Image (cartoon, rainbow, N blue to C red):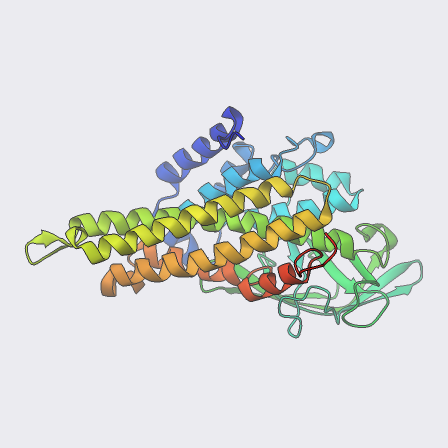
Length: 381
């Protein structure tokens, strides 16, 4: 099997790497984070100009119909560069729209970089269970009325439109009865509280108070949104694995460089065998995570839902183990400097920590993997 990226995929990655190196330095990023908006319109315009916003959108809506492997290369470079613009939130929202069908005009706007999306999925009580939905969608006058609250919506305040999961039937934790909606963020009754997260990104808590939407706001069928929700969440988890890989590569390289330059007892500390062994362990974790993340990206393009679930949960678990080990070792090997805002390593570690907690942590995905058919002896394959 050929594990090399295609020339077109490598070109996307190289274009992003050049842009980050030239215009999105660590110092430039700190200024963006410290600004009132917390994101840069100029950086977003560049991402659109480079074709990144069009990459995952179907060709019929002006995109490049990029696969999960294509997106893997992009997310890896965004992870290395610690890019804080709402790219992940937008492409995840685009995946909801693509899978749900319809809303072609919104996808066209995403492809052109004219529209940012956010996915309002999590709630206070739900933790990692996306089925646990207390937000309600009540059928009324040919449309729906939304009531509820969503928490930690990534880039919720920066989005022009929101993808919202709500319960139109069934009990609070049932897979049946979930409906998905897309609506303008400025819709009457939507209240957004914006804040900065640990890793410098933006998130929001969003209240839906008697929000009225038409039936055309549905993404997929009424009450049957779980299949779209689960598949899109798996897609997002796969992208996060790729982003984590890029961040781990950056923090590994920074740590290696630090060991070569920091001296103790008259020699670089990288000469000490104990520290060499720790770097070797970090490298093993990194490469194992890379293999699992790539496998997940490949399986995301397949038709077998159980294979997709199995690969994504295995990758999220293995990447979660790796990011903890690599991040913690990098901080320790940097000494006290490893936790200061002056070093990119600290910011990479914070981002890795947030990735671990997004769309299911390691424990959640381990339990999900074990519950899939074929895991237990004698189970159905």
